[in-house]
Length: 429
Image (cartoon, rainbow, N blue to C red):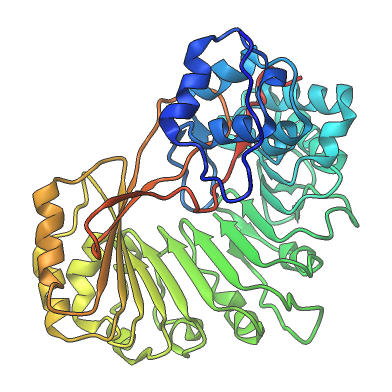
């Protein structure tokens, strides 16, 4: 096939999805060199992805993305940069293959800006080999902006730890100084010595910590701070009480996200002091041991993100000064109308409510009932449907989700949202 396409003129609208699909369906034996770079990139924008885990931001795209990639043998440079910008590695085998790709095709090292490595639950080879392999991969890449990584430990087996072993980051000293997003996964044991290593990444904007028990208190006067840190994501098991005093000194910290993280009592001061503008709390058992009466006094909260069960239990103490409320639902945890009616009756000053439906699409009449609750107010109600694509071993680019706004009642294709795009590492190169 000889598919001739021209570069869109200034002001010309972007190609619609049916037109993009037709490029692929006309002849699957075409090569990427026969498509304009703009067309190729537009095609990749529309491939579906499997829903990511919220705290690591990893997408798992559909098999169809790499069916096309297989027949596109001659890549445009712009497409290569687009595909390899973010790499998601899900198994030890794919880590080995990706390492081989970095060795053979050195130019890829400068393209990768985001990297996700699997934690120990997915690994099938000896942990000492895994440690060395991950270290090589991380430090072969020229400059990372985002990293999701397990943490290694000195001495003995890579994943086992006792009080005599210190956790170590897998990043060579002096590498990736521009790192902005760092997510680290532990193994639910007590750790010490890690915080001093974290303080060296002075360009961090987002820090994610999962399954860590921090032993030492961090004295912000004893070492360099993270002056640009804006968001902390805490996942699973333990709220880092020992880090609260340090959090209070962070000049730009405004966002805290808690996933399956019990809130201890007494309430950590970072939650109740008024410093935070954005708070996310996922899954109700995070609140087993605490009450949220302090919520009502948090007048500086701008955005609150919760699940429906938290909405049902604590809507009476949600701050009236909220500007944005996000409610994340799935087919097993839906938002009931009663709590929404009680919240609307309190006459909050809220401007936007966003419902994110994960892996399912609610009935039209259900959405209409929600809209009717806020029909007499100035609240803008939006519905975001996040589909789950077919499962595969691949990692590739994905599309944006659908968004329906209450202002005009139309379905809008939310293509302008920033997305994460990941490259297939099994067989890459």
